[in-house]
Image (cartoon, rainbow, N blue to C red; front, top):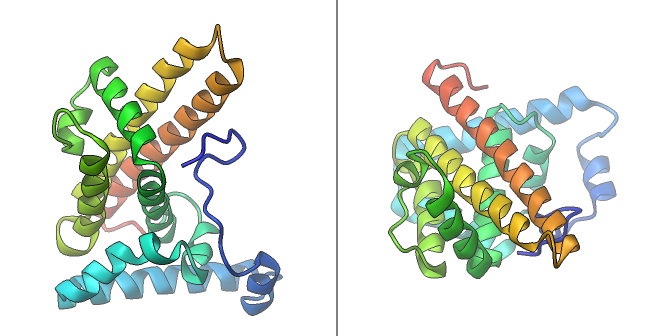
Length: 213
């Protein structure tokens, strides 16, 4: 995954946004929101009720094979602390790890050492966690959305983001004196990860209160 400060989690979407806007009536935000929430709830409910291993594995591999397509782009327009917003952020997290597992492993290892919290334990990565282990971890977290306790999966993802954010922050400090552009990119990445962690943790709390819509 690129360290581009403008959009560190970017993944190209094959369908142009203007085409998407025409299909989903961009002039009617309420309709876009309705469809986003309906598809997120329908997908999650169906998969969790059926517990079909083949379907779950297809969903886990969806972004790895195809990137984020129309339905996930639809979720991207939802507020962060909603079900479609949470699913969008979790898929972006998966893409971040799959696209550049080496950087992810570097950030995670640095964050694991530096952070003063139980987040590494909550996230559940082995020690040490190399690129392959982090790819497996993020897939396991995503799988937990469909087969386990949804709130626990969200909490694990939030903890993972906090560890990564800590690592990015400390690496940014290391680069500040010699590579200011890289330091800025890492700081931007740390802020984005920290924001995602807060959003996902809030979504977990809302889910436990049956209030995540």
